[in-house]
Length: 359
Image 1 (cartoon, helix red, strand yellow):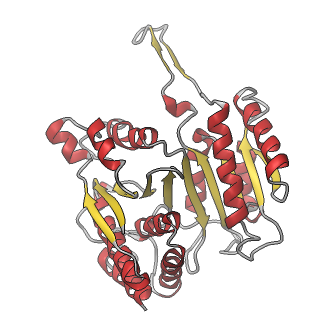
Image 2 (cartoon, rainbow, N blue to C red; image 1 turned 135 degrees about the vertical axis):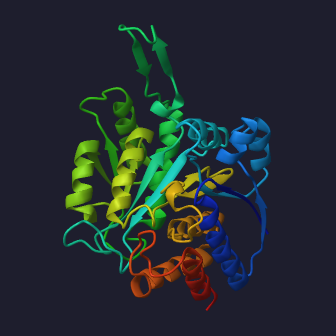
Image 3 (cartoon, rainbow, N blue to C red; image 1 turned 180 degrees about the vertical axis):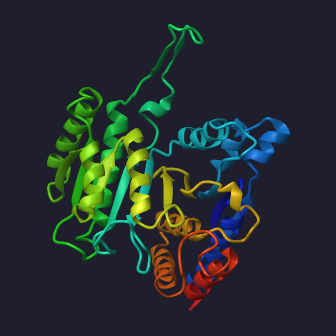
């Protein structure tokens, strides 16, 4: 029995979450586990009614669950930053979800803007540190609103944060790298940084990277790329990558680049993971308010988020079955991943996946 908190959120979030839950229930029936789902209304509408984002009492409630499935956060009537900081960042920091896991995998039948690249080339994972860096909010203003205004926001990391993220990345490369999946002759972990300019923060990252790798993971090949070079090679030679590990800010940027190469935000899923606690899984594309209620939004990113959740909970066979179902549907059913151009409604896509999982 898994206790799952469901936060449908804003815009199209409830629509895609319903389909993810539909697929989860099909997987549970097929593979013999049970789920107890509890829904929470944290999001823009609640904020408009009460002025509340994610209260401390809500965090304590969420701690009692095995995992969290999130639909989307972002409301057109709420100023940018309020919900993102008050719900997403608060949950990540309060629940110490220190890993953001973002697979970049091109599925069969999905178009990519990269010339001459296919599923064999676009198949890697980004491990993004999720609780440090510029996102800590360390900094502030002086003389705000004057011609002499100064704004400071500092990238902050301690050795503990860096080491636990690196160890997670090494372990992930060991278990899920291309060699482990039968897709290559080595498992490789690449550090994405900027040691030539950010000579304090990424000096710490690089030293820890090589010290841990040499002492604890000699079988994992280590590589280093500056973040600008990483972006270049993600476009030119994505097949070079297996697992990439990086800090919070760079991870935020390169994973959106990765998402567009795998078919766009309609397929991009992510996990905010605390390996020792409660993790939260979400589609990356946001709330897409202009499509709300039309039944045309692509639910695959939410379904893939649910798939990641099951894998993290240890239901690996069920997770693999969902991924195979998604690959079948992208290869043989969908006309496009774009909203309104899939050839099916949102609920029909969910039905296709659930039916394939149940076979």
